[in-house]
Image (tube, rainbow, N blue to C red; front, side, top):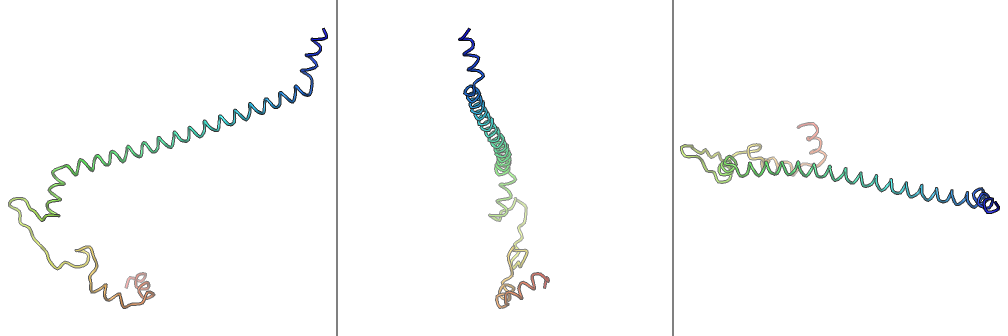
Amino acid sequence: MSEDHGWKNFFYSRWFLIGVVVATVLVGFAFVKAYYQDYQVRQEIERLQYDASQLEAKKIESMEILKYVQSRDYVEAKARTDFNLAKPGEQVAVITGATGAATGGQVKKKVIELEHISNPVKWWRLFTNN
């Protein structure tokens, strides 16, 4: 009976209570750490899935561009614009002396004119459309 009483005293002692509290805290920390790592892994999986979907969309777009570049329409358009070629029976018109918007650049006269104007006046003209 005295051994039975010894175990009972051990379970009701402060040392047992401290041991249980320490063990509970350690298990709690381990659980929180594992949960946080799981959360980080789930976030990484979501990010990688998003990246994969973006890359898949880019791949599809690239495949469409490649398909167009390999098409006869692209080859014909490129031959017309880069090499000034025409289909048999078509006539090519060459326009020279194009200015401004037609050439995609600025007219030299206007560029030279703006070189001699001060910056504040240039800004004023920009905002007042003069």
